[in-house]
Length: 227
Image (cartoon, rainbow, N blue to C red):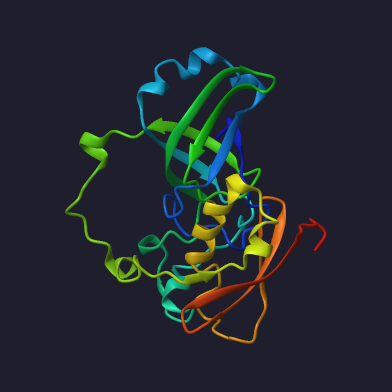
């Protein structure tokens, strides 16, 4: 398959990325097409759709071998489930599927046509194989069951973000960052209230602790990719 585009998001690392698309709808990402596909005609009519499907590569999780079972983070990292009953990146083919909102279409930029999307769960630079419109008539199934994942759908943390630290975050990124933190970026098997975690987002490294369902931001510093 050919890479048609790459996404540019506020997540330079895997840690902290929402576990599913749409969980933090405030996030914004830009889809920039590869040279061969920078043709505005390829996007004709796309502005009529509110949501898109992205088919992409778990480029940081590719491996030669695979396992029939994986350990979903939401189950504590110790319970094994069949790989095809999960959305784990560790699969026979490292392909991801995300539903995002289409926020803007720019046909003539210095990078060619660019799409701005909301709610993406992709790391910065992730290669995209295809983009398809979401059809509400056929793609929406309100009666669908969520299996073991549905039991954790409403889990979230209360976030305490001291004003002097939140002021270090760009105003247009604050709401999205709060959503990322409320979703609990920690692996499901880690629950040490004394541990200081760090999530990279929008050029900052945000340090925090979690205790009894409350996430408290402890520091904000400039992100350095060599960490």
